[in-house]
Length: 85
Image (cartoon, rainbow, N blue to C red; front, side, top):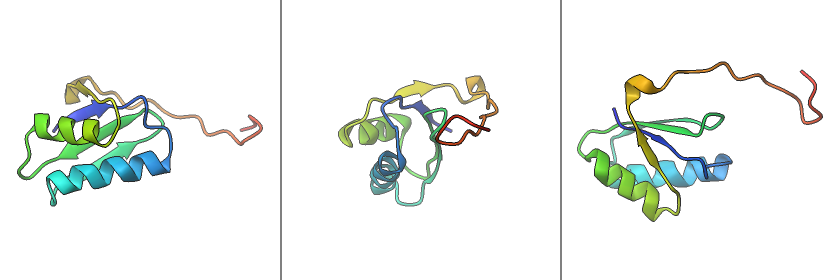
């Protein structure tokens, strides 16, 4: 499963744009995004990792390919807009 770190993915609009670009490249791909960690995980059905990387780049973002095994989910602390828990 290709995994990309996309540090310039910062909001829901970014997530939507990247997801649409990936699904335009591979319409049946399953795209999972962890916005807090800036990770995009793709289960492709026909596109190669390079084609998926190129789709994210063409959408205007800077993907960095990662090894799926090296991605460790870290707990994300949820805080309110004022910094409270």
